[in-house]
Structures are given as structure tokens and as C-alpha cells.
Image (cartoon, rainbow, N blue to C red; front, side):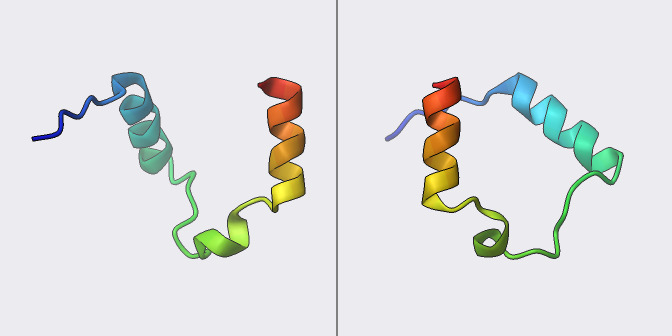
Length: 47
């Protein structure tokens, strides 16, 4: 059986964003996701 670990800091941040209403649950992921070139630029800059 696979073992899963939870990033507790990420969960806390996600809950804060939800509590503050700072999330978008109306936009489809495919519309919000960066295109490949943008994602590649971010990876190149930030690793």
C-alpha cells in the first residue's frame, strides 16, 4: 500500500486562503494554468 505524506505548512496556507476567500473556484484549471513557455521561464528563473 502506498504511503502518503502531507505538507502541513501547505495545508495551513490553503486553509488561510480559503478562510480569507482568496481562491478562485470558478475558473477552469486549463484556463488558469500557464502555457508551457511561461512555465519553462519560471522554472529557468527559479529552479
